[in-house]
Length: 113
Length: 111
Image (cartoon, rainbow over all chains, first blue to last red; front, side):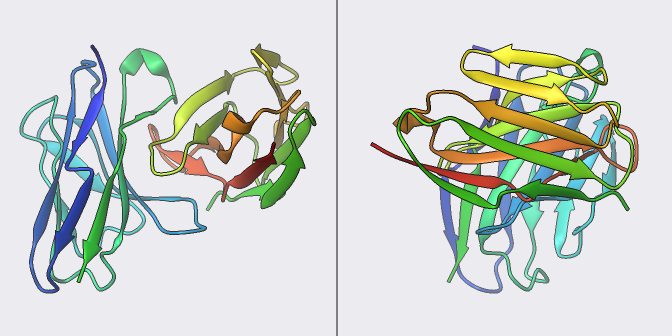
């Protein structure tokens, strides 16, 4: 089955700890994205990558880091510098032939205690 | 930067009723996308529009690309309980490959 997987679905961490969220896609898509969603709000772009070994900051990149060493993988690290890390995190990807259409994974809900 | 205003923010309807929601942009778009997000899940693409005036259907859903290219509309006919969720509009962002999202319309359907 082709798709985007995010793991785990729920993640709990203590304040001050870094945590890495996984995003894998087997759609052969070139571009990948990370969004943050807070209750009652829309999607805010954290980081995106149009090609392997390259990525750009989105609108709310502070306190986050990413890597894009493989086409199919785009992990997001939530660092201790992120002041309000508790949120729902969504990964998306887009193929070159898909024009503007992005396809989303199931999301990871991160709770920092 | 580009802004999308989506309305209404929330809707409470009875099963069987029709639903209408819309999205307006501060700038001209060449694409409108409509997504649905079920509770606790990722958004799923419902309809993509690429031409001004275009009217596209997907089952009970119909979306239109406004003539001015600054707005789009989504209609759901004969709503059912599984239509519950958040509906997002989206359009091209400020640089290639990015999207700008509306704030979402929360739909509740009472049986």
